[in-house]
Image (spheres, rainbow, N blue to C red):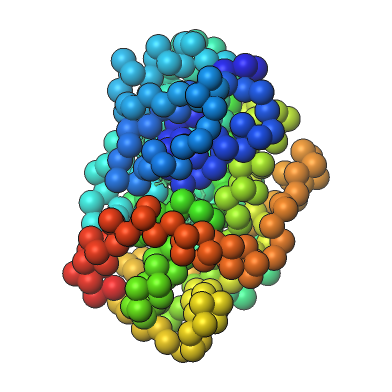
Length: 332
Ligand code: NAD
Ligand code: TDX
C-alpha cells in the first residue's frame, strides 16, 4: 500500500489520522473533503506537501470519487455529517452525505477492487441503561435513535452488504466519543471549554446523567491504522478506551481545571431522544490485533485539550457567536 485516499480528512478526526499517518507510515495521502462548516484547512497545515494533497469535493458525486479511488490503493472513509443536534434540525444532509456518499464510495471501491475502511460510531447500537453490566460488542444489535445515528447505521449496513454480495474488501470500526484538539466548538467538550474562556456558564442538557465513553482522537487514529494494516476483511471492530463519564462529571472537571467553582454551570433544555449511555467493550481489537490506547488518564488529556483551546482562540473565535446563537434559539 502506497497511496491512501482519506475522505473527511479536513475534519476533527480525519485530520488527526492524516497527522498520525505522517508520523507512523511512509504513505502518501490524498484528502477528499467538501470543506463544510465542520472542516478546517488549518488542521492540515504544516504537513509535508510531497506526501499530502487536498482535493475539495463531495463524496456523493461519483464523477469526483471514481477517478480518485481508481488512483489510490485504499480508502479510509471518515467524511460525514457528524453532529446529532444538527440532524434533529435538518436531517437531509445526513442522508445525502452519510448514506448516498457511502454508497458512492462503495460503488467506486467495488469497480476498482480497492480496500476500504469505513469509520463509524458506537451510536448505531442505541443506548444502554446506566446500570446495565453489559457494554456494546460487535454482536450488539443495531438500534439507532437519532437521524445522525440512523444514517451512520445505514452506511454500515451498506458496507456489510457490499462485502457479502460483491466481495468488497472492507473493514468497519465503531468508535466511542472522541475528544482532543481541532474538535468543532458545537460539540460538548469544546463548547464548554470555550464558554468558560468567554465567561459564559457551561450548558448541560437535562440532568447531566448521560454517560459517554471518552477516547482521545490520537487513540482512535492508532486503532484505525491498526485495523487497516491487520484487520480481517469483512470484520467489524469496536474502538474504545474504557473512558465512561457522565456529562455532569465532565462539566465539573472542566470548571475545576479552569479554576472555576464546580457548580458554575446551567441545566438547559434536553436533547430530543437523548441517548442515555454509550459504553464500548473493545476486547476483540485489543486481543486479535494487539491495539491498546495510550491516553489512559482522561483528566490529563482534558487538561491538554483545554490548553489547546486557550492557545488556539484565533481558530475558534470567528465561529463562537454563531454557534451560541443557534443553541440559544433552542433554549440550549
Ligand atoms: P467532523 O464533522 O469534524 O468532520 C467531518 C468532515 O467530513 C469535515 O471535514 C467535512 O467537511 C467532511 N464532509 C462532510 N460532508 C462531506 C461530503 N459530502 N463530501 C466530502 N467531505 C464531507 O466529524 P468527526 O467528528 O471528525 O467525525 C469523523 C468520522 O468519525 C465520522 O464518520 C463520524 O461519524 C465518525 N465518528 C466520530 C466520533 C466523534 O466522537 N466525533 C466518534 C465515532 C465515530
Ligand atoms: O452543550 C451541550 N451540552 C450537553 O450536555 C452539548 C453540545 C452536548 N451535551 C451532551 C449531549 C451528549 O450527551 O453531551 C454529550 C456529548 O454531546 P456531543 O458532543 O454532541 O456528542 P454525541 O451526541 O455523544 O456524539 C458524538 O459522539 C459520537 C459525536 O458528535 C458523533 O459524531 C459520534 O458518532
